[in-house]
Image 1 (cartoon, rainbow, N blue to C red):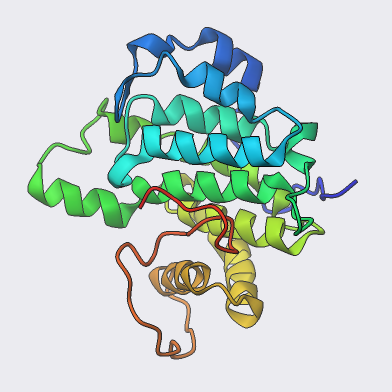
Image 2 (tube, rainbow, N blue to C red):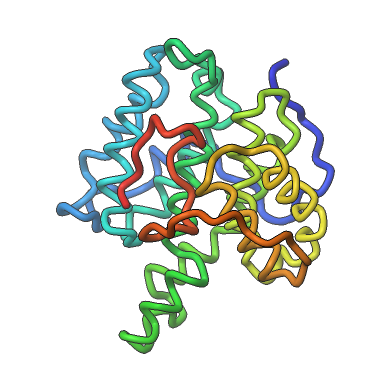
Length: 248
């Protein structure tokens, strides 16, 4: 076993649908993406289950551009995120990356964090100021935000993963997803993991995510180190080590 199945601190809620069901039961051609409809998405999603890690990461990058272009949430973003979350436990997620021996699962988790960040309170709030009603019931972004407890439940088993990269990627994803009000009871548990990121991580964007989450939840944190701010600097970047460029 290369990850812990412990559900300590895992949110309760509806179970994630099997990835096969998401793939088969979604009307992809009817869903908006950044570049037309999503009829081609099943072919890209299928590449995530190949034994070739380069093909897997290439597919993730393509998916990010298609359903997360310019930090935007599209109609297809939700189903794609459910599929990606659904394969976190698939054997294909354990494929090691070339030269680094890091499971592709770390990149899957970071991809989910990136999509969650696109619908975060910060990003959605900015857009709502310019476009009132943007977050109204039934809107594309609101529907994606409603998925956060389900996505967080899929991420939770990896918060104590034995692999450092997977564990950190899971923490970052969970911290962004835990903005959902129904996950408030899990924030103290996640705060411990966020402090661990601040203590040991060398990844500046991930440290910013941890810091912002702790500050938003009312925790005292040390003064930040003097790092240059970057566009969308709270958003997670790649799988925590810079080799998967997100669509920011």
